[in-house]
Image (cartoon, rainbow, N blue to C red):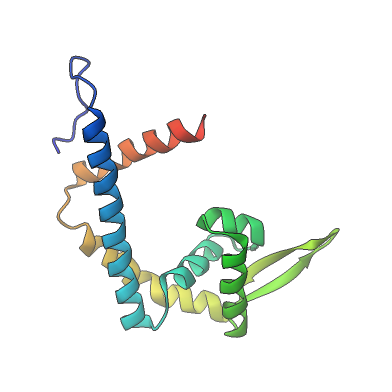
Length: 157
């Protein structure tokens, strides 16, 4: 990567290049996820989905509706319910009824859940730095910009 966008004179990528890009993105994502899963299991005896739930709730001190959590994590309501059930049984999250909506619940971190996440987060950040250490700051910036453009274009449709 050069760190610059193609000029207006550069032809658009071919269909083959776009398929190749998709496959590379998928392969890279799977490799990073696999590495993080293994590291979380070995260092913290936890799973990536459990870590992701704790991370999402850590960013929302007042908690989140289960449906919001499901959307944020891009998983089904059923998957989130199972994860939250297990985290609640371990004392890491708690549920609270939402006044005026009998069907909805809000989930939030307990003190133990906050402490658990805060103990795991620094090593997670170090692992991300290690995984992406071969990319320059400019390469990271270009990749982020390209992915944000892709996400923005698709979300606005």
